[in-house]
Length: 530
Image (cartoon, rainbow, N blue to C red):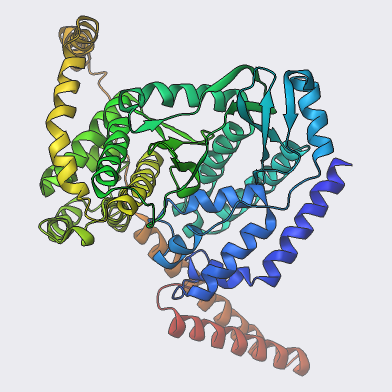
């Protein structure tokens, strides 16, 4: 039965791919014989993802944070992805609520949903205590559908990476792993509730401007999440706030996201317009915590220093920090990267406020890194997208917001908090121990090295790199020599066979001529690539 489901889903995906001309899309994003990207191809790609449902919509949202992988027109179009599907009848959802929580806790539950997405529906409700809440209910059978899609994507990515060098550069297997991690988090509402409380504690210092709705314990399971209801509207240009309050909200909102990334290392990673509401009392409510960004200490510190270096126009420091965060190889062009960075970085300085985009600046750094063979971590892409979304909402409130100047102003506070953290006794002791431990090993390792030198047992391993072109040249020479020998052998044997069997001799001559013409055509078409 499961195998039938897999086949049925594979056929459905294939049909959608054919109808939306997916091969053209693959060419435009460089997977199959690259060609210029078009708006039509991007629109078709977005439509196909929306039609295929949950997993593919989430894939598109993930790809929208990767300007190093996709052309600008695709990034822009994927930003329009809508996770809004036809509502389910309430009865199967009522059954889920009854099984997981119990209907007796509610005075009423509105059967008409406030929102209906591919993973869950949200319904307004009233607790017996009189508290207004929303009930988020996971769609029945959605986990099985996601499992099926992830397995299909995983197999497709594995086949593509085996057959396509471009697919290897796009790291399709790693992309599928990242997609699975995001989806698993969004499917488990216990984890989302935990995330909501974490982000609530992170933004608690801004409670006059920002807040996170309260999770209504103990009404939380993997399939059902009950939270405080927030009455508000999406942030739009016609928000109706006084200019002073709008400016204050914008600055606090963007500052809060900078602090989440650079100081806490834990941030609300999806602050798009649907997840931020302007409330009746003039505050901003953060919603939906299925996607949370987490950074290790070293990456968090490096990103903080990187944002500061970008804001202060220090190209060499930006390059050093990016290289320290990234994977490089012998083919990476670090010198060229620094040269291009020095040329591009000043464009974000001393410009009209309306022309500065922090998110676009980080996207440019991603593209520039890829062009020079420097592979940035996926956390960089998610941080870039998060800051771009936060900046967009802040600018809607205050079009004169200057994010670069704000990062400069915040730098002293961020660095002072970082210094305080480092000087805490526990942190200082741990740091000192990790730095001194390698030094303590030096005498013993030096003695071991000298002993091996004395006994003649020291071995030095050399691994040759960058020989792909030489290997290809040798293979081409061998192939052409082999083809020439075969043609010569056919000609000689055909001439000798002329006295024995004229027909066989003619066939041999034609075969030699055909093979010779094929070799000549390959040489003329792709010199050196037979």
